[in-house]
Structures are given as structure tokens and as C-alpha cells.
Image 1 (cartoon, rainbow, N blue to C red):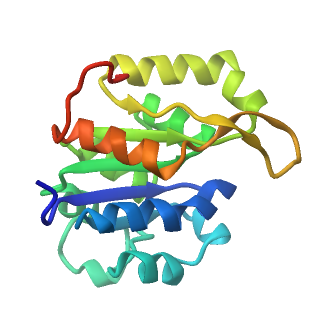
Image 2: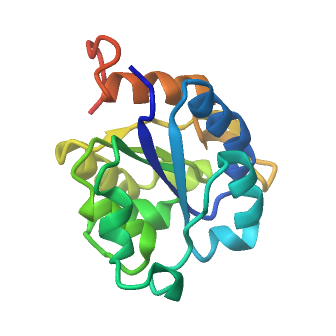
Length: 189
């Protein structure tokens, strides 16, 4: 089932990037191929080289990179993807995705992807509870984007509450359901 399943992972700038080693390891353990795409701000929190060492593959950061040659990166990247996984998804990324704003490689690839799309929000609890953010989440769900709700945890600020990115095993389970590898009953879309 998992052999050579390609997951495009959009990474935005959240301290939840510290959870990526476990998530990428869990995907690779299932033999998934993970192609990571980092926003410019994510690159300030985590090195693309470090993410490349976790995925074993090139990391994409710039839609206008000369290395792409004549290819259109946001189209080529998702052409044969089995799934798009935005993890972590900041409030900024959620807002952009909900409103179709395509101003970087993560957002343009997300919009171009015809495979199932999963987002894993990660933000301060106050941001998660904000009615505008919740409207964006509800809108994405109505558009059949799978949202893995954040969990209770401690923030970088020291505050606690619901806003931490879900753990790797929970995300992996949702990815397996989205890919049709397990029963979809009770799946939150």
C-alpha cells in the first residue's frame, strides 16, 4: 500500500517544526517518499539542509529557483503526489489557503494539488480560538480539506492550551485514512 507513496509536505514557520523529525520518520518508516516545501519564514526556524537530511531528498524553498529550469515547480511538485500535508500550518498559512492566496511555493503547490490535502494547524491557543481563524478552518473543511485539530500543549510563550500540532501517530493515522489505507469512518473533513 505505502510503497513509493509520495507526500508533499508544506512547512510553515511554527515552533512545531521541532516535531517534524518524528513525523517524517513515521512517514518514511511506511516507505513514503517525502518532498518538503518550506516557506521563507520556515527557513528562519529550521534549516532546509536539516529537513533534507530527514527526508533524504531535495527540499524546495523558492518557486523562482533557477535549478527548476523550464519546469513550473508548483505544478511539477504535486503532479504525481498522493497527498499534500501542511505541517505545521500556521494561522497565516491557514488564512492564505482558505482565501486562495498563492504567493509562495507552499500555497501555489497546495492550490495546484488534486490529491487529498491535509493540514495540521499549530499556533498559540488564543490564535486557534479566534473566530476568524475558526471561520477559515470551517471553510477549508467544507472544501474537503482534512484538518487535524491541534492538541493541548505548552507554547513557546509558556502559555498552555489547545494549539500544539497533533502528534505524529495521530497525523499518520489521518494520512492513512485520507489515502484510503484504513477505514474512513469518523474521519473529520
